[in-house]
Length: 330
Image (cartoon, rainbow, N blue to C red):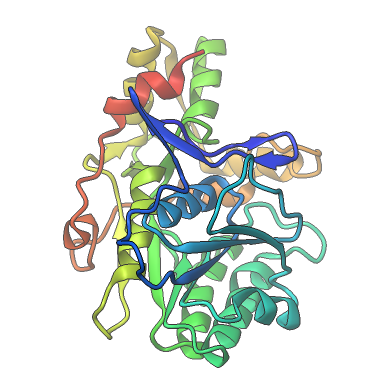
């Protein structure tokens, strides 16, 4: 499936699959139905673009809120790109005025200066939830992540957990979606691993490669967000989205290597050394690995059987192997 990707200074929002290609403005709602507005913060990001597209395909009027909005490519009804700063209450209030739903897909992986994990994942998330409650928004969805934990020693993981709590404290009916690590054609996960596997005859693993991962297709996560927006029950949801298979990190590397027809030597590397490398790398303009990525690789990120998941939303997640070749195509 063709995915929405930035094209220069415009946003490509054209979807299609195989021989069937349809413009996004083709509504799936009955003629004359009231069009509900959903504002997506972080709607130009990896997951956010898919959320925008899936919402739009379901007939919603979507506002893409970002600090540097890009106009959509072509004339697309029911879609508006607006300038909004999630750190500014007035800007947030303007972006969500009259909206039925709000999605917070803003994410930060490397903290720099005033852009801290707390400022983005806690304070800004709470600000958006506060404004959503005041504006009478019906559905407020916070994108978090499996493993979010307010008691974690990791600043990133702790901020994710605190962000969930802050959002629910401000907007008691808010829904939380926790994806596992996501893959897609333009991801920074499988593509990075594939690039390194192609280049390195000896591949350093995080620890002994025993961390458990449940990779999930970003398209399925976007579909889950729409199902939650459409949810009619009053009780708030916490949904964990994981793919159909759980891998150890070593198994995942071997699966990708087989798809690439390469046979690297996988070598364990202690987490302490990874932390040191990440600390040094973070002073570079583009860090090859961040400390929060190392910290995430120390914990299993597998969907809990005690929380709702894809099954409760009526979604059958696609296995990574089904789309691996299209993602890894040189």
